Structures are given as C-alpha cells and as structure tokens.
Length: 149
Image (cartoon, rainbow, N blue to C red; front, side):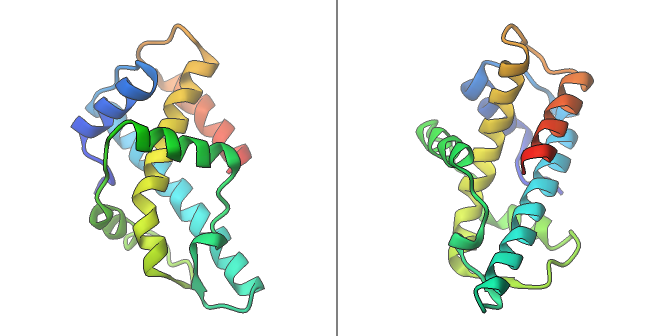
C-alpha cells in the first residue's frame, strides 16, 4: 500500500523541485514516508508519555522549523493528500504503543506533504541540475533525513 499515488507523486516532485520521477521511484518514496512518519509518531509517543499522556497530540510530534516550512510550501502547491491511505499504511507498520488524537490524524496529510516537498528540495540541494533522481541520490537523501529526523 502506498500513502500517495503515482500521479500525485509525479506532480508534487515536479511542482516542488522541477524533478521527474516515475512509478519505479514510488516504492522508494513509500518506504521513505513510512519510515519517517513512523519515526515521528514514535518520538511523539515519547513526548506524550513525558507529559503524562497516553494519546499523542500534534504538539508531541517533533516537527522542526524546516519541516514546518516544507509543510507551508506543500500547502502553497494547492495539492491535498487523503488521510485514509496514510492511516491504512500506518496500520501495517509496527505498533507505536500509543494512540494518536484525531487532530494528529488530520495533520498527517500535511506532514506527509511536507516530507515529500522536503525530500524533493533535498535532491536539488544535493545536485542543483538534477532532473531525475537515481539510486545514489535516493540513498544520499535518505541518509541525510535519517541523520535529521
């Protein structure tokens, strides 16, 4: 299951960073998004527990200033993501050991959109003339995000 469809993936990368991607890249994006969203929720669980709560609230998610700016950039692209595929995908990942609030559920599409925009922009930062990310670009970008998120 994929959080985002191929057509929307292609449009987002084109709008966010003038990059061309195809259906072969969708699997990499899905793996990337699954890992990052799961990681944000795990950290959110720790923050919620530290604040004496069993339910993750939006303020528990470790959204950095840079990711928040990418969320705003996603919003400006006039694209929307559906929450249902995100929740269905999260249900297939390892349990995080906490529930998340409806507000977190409603925020997930924009967080995912922000992650997509941030990833696309990262490719361009790594190689400004890049048109079509290759395996080495994906690997480098994933290592960068693993270091930061």
